[in-house]
Length: 233
Image (tube, rainbow, N blue to C red; front, side, top):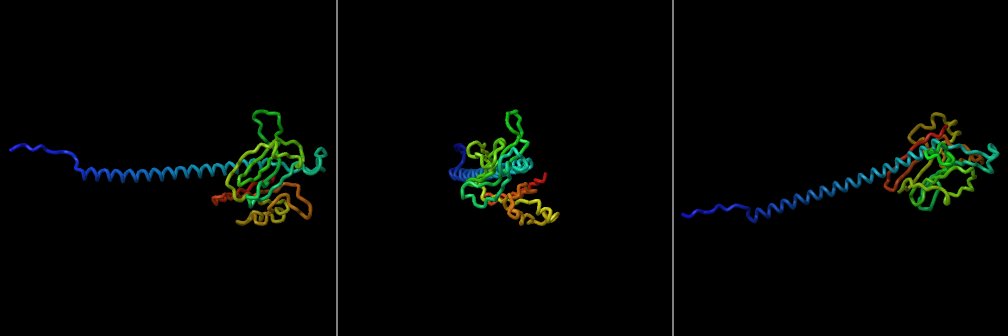
């Protein structure tokens, strides 16, 4: 009898089955990798959005904490006509109607680490254009508001994009005195606050600053965030 050689290796069916299993594993692995990549990208976008919003709140809060009260010409004989440092504010419910003013004021304590020859007072304007919040600023130049050339010599700083609405509510000193502790009670405490500033009180425009400002921002993705700023100083 002749010796038969033992044959080793895989059959064609075994090879096909192994290839099929490998293909399935690779498919699931690719899908898992794609899902993880999309999740990581989405998380990064959300975090960038949150950081952008948080940065806006921080800068706005710093501005409002250092705001200067308006000055009347009668109080300062060196100031020609009207109010030298006006505080103005209004809500923006429709960001499709061009450029709209949100806030306008003068602040102090503007840091000068480079010791540049400039004022430590800063004229500031917040405005919304095409759904983007901008902060324009420059050194105080002792000019009345009619002489501010925002488009020509203000430094423009982009703050927040994708804004659908930006609502402001202002608490006046008269309302605070009238309602006392009740002025901040309830979930809808700012419902009757003034929606613009200055207020028109019996035909006389208020030249003071509000005691508090409630700012609410709604983004295009439906996110709503708000902050209450105490301005009583």
